Amino acid sequence: MNKFFLGIFLMLFLVACSSDNNENETEDVFSYPTTLKLMQYEILENVRVFTKSGEIKDENVIKRFITNGGKEPNLFESKGPSLSIESESLINYKTKDSVEFDWGYLKQKLTVKEVGKEIYFYPKDTLVYYDINQGVLDDFVFKMGNYKPYYKTVTIPGTFPTVVASLYAAVVATGNLNALTFNTMSYKTIRSKNMQIYEQSQRFVLNNGFDKNVLALLNAGDTIAVQNTRMVFEKIKN
Image (cartoon, rainbow, N blue to C red; front, side):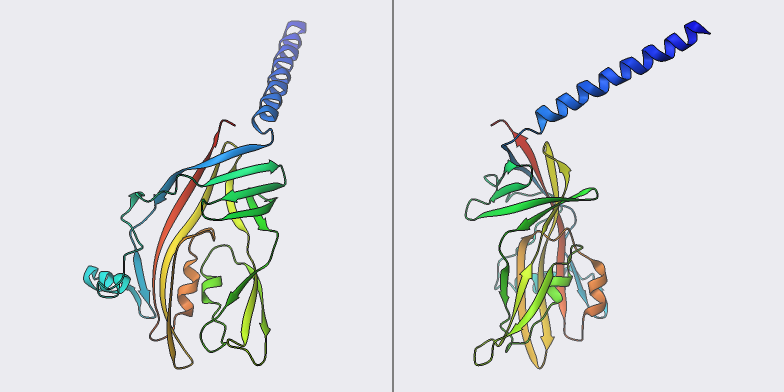
């Protein structure tokens, strides 16, 4: 019996030592400052197009919509590794709670907060989104992502547009300082509202991926093209 308990003690001792070593290694890995670089931009699916009636499967119709009949460049790519990776994009951790996103053409200072298994990067300043449709706010774009930003409308009489939205949106990632993964998307929409038709499109939307529930909000005359993508940043030597 004594030998048995001695064996158990030695096993616990070795596990404890191993845990201590792992903690030390973790502290070394997550030292600050540190930098991660965009190493992978992956197209998770081919572009999909939806209307109020459902998904469009006709490839010719899809192509006409996403290129406006050949008059516009196609912002969508085929499924697989992207050929348009922004390899100079960096995430610079200043401290555990403060980072700077460097997109090459734009730098953003953000604060960091862990929410469950996800990491939220919050902007220090509120962004302002102006609606061009006669001052009527279309919040459809805000609802497209799995992450829903906080926003509020503000009416400014005597100006055009009269309605603006103060937008407070976090960037959501999973992982740690060795590698961070961002679920992203590209989209193009044509929306009909208040007898007006207007179009929006964007790539590299950092909203944690497309929320299919938004399809229930499509009205007659609305069309949306969407493509889920993913960005992976990996730690580089400082």
